[in-house]
Length: 343
Image (tube, rainbow, N blue to C red; front, side):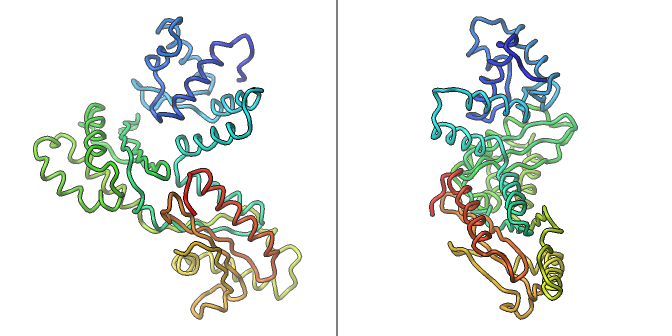
């Protein structure tokens, strides 16, 4: 449902709520909005939030907590900014950068970009995550969900890493807040790897101080161990287009590309890169590779000087390399610009 001019108050609440959420990543409450709308009662703001939730602009994390914006709310927010004649291009870019940083998980952002890259080049793309353990922690939040699970948000110098963790029925919201504060206090400005290696020692020293949420901290540690494991995700948005314009022999080469993509270990071995340049590999370059007549063009994802992943395009040997290289480089630069990374 679209917000029209007759619902200006709802429109204004959306803009303020989304802006606050982008800046703080904190769930939206009537109390936080009261600071902006001093001429509106708390009861009225609660009613407006309930109405906006039913209209699809917000969703509630759990029955008694705050709300977070949906894609509909973000569209309303961004469209309002774009329609403003006071906002120049650099300001729009800054807002979009903040949106990427604060409202989208880091892995989701990278996966989405990999899919877009596949779509514009008609080639399969591969995202290999292999350096998340080196990211620096800035904040940790554990947010209870309705289904007795919890949302783990680890804010880092490169964006937010999120995961669902199991929540014991005996753990209440206050314990989640205490655990969040405790972990942030002890591991802020430390790497994820440091936290994993030292979390047990820190907990032992705390003793009775953390006894009520020790199991919760163990769940956090297990989730982080899972997050930093090397993973390989393949996006293939136009599988048939890869075959267009190829002769019979080249079609065989293209088939070898699909076979190559089925072996995750082999893909990781070929794609993973730690240097700072575009890398190009033909299947014949690797004796044990199943790529055969195909090629891989890869580049590192470096954010704030930390290599966290490799992004690659895979295709047959005869391909528009200028277009593929330009597309890959553009995407990598976009990631660098969005997150403020150093080349």
